[in-house]
Image (cartoon, rainbow, N blue to C red; front, side, top):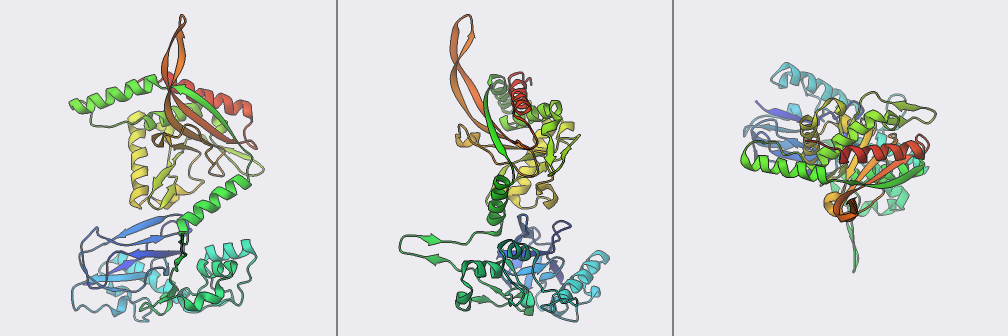
Length: 426
């Protein structure tokens, strides 16, 4: 029996997703776990794996299409199978076409979502416009009341607003349209402009979101950065011991320097809970638990997943959780709720592996602070009795929101992180 492939619902607030690229074509054989296509929400980007083995009988949307969640985007089955009932533009879609009760429920939801986009305007007379497009239009003062969108069934999407803002609406007729079998899956194709000495490529949705968040953070908060260094001889000794234990077979878990530093940060946050907080405008929300955010560089851009209740883990558990969160981001299957800016109470961004000696990390609002971890540099230090030697020091850069935290407590918190690092035992 043919199996439908539905657009996942990534988080409670996500209504539509954009297909960025298909990796499998109609008629190709697919296996369970094969990546069918990548897609983006207004928070992050993900890959969708094939739920079944068979032939990709049909795809109902093309690259760039904005698709409501829980709507069929493709169907997998055997050669010659009938799949018309799975087409979201068909009025014959029935729950009985799915093999079990849970899939039947999803098909009902898909049918409702398909019917919801059958007209450009809703019954109340509201214009069909995606949430992100509406937000952008209102932010830029764009009148979209008479705009004919290029999304599903004339739905106004982000690219339509961007064309108006850039003055490129008149050139829209020259763009190649991607036609899909579903009537409402037509969308404008990305255009790449090239000059004699440059190439110009539109920003991805994730890049736009990152840019907007960083700009808003700097514009809407009073950020200040303090820099300090910590002696990391104890951390390096622990790291060497871990490597030797792994080589000898005594230990199979690789605990990194970043894991140790994050553990020290959590201990410091327990002593300075005022930094483990969110600034809410007219109040400060201080958390009893530490939900640690870690900046992860992925092929799709920067993501900051949260490790919930990090203060309840010992070092080994924390190391496992940190690696799991980072891997999920890189693979594209991180829970969207964990990469919301409100999911973490404090964030650590480590650029030490890149050789960065000092930097100013940007706060992930509404959090009140973020720690930047820099590279290790050998510096001369007094070991006592007028004995000097080169000692490895790691740079620590704490950016805090001066609206919520004063300079004194921020400095004491940063010093506590340094003390935790220098007193580290394994």
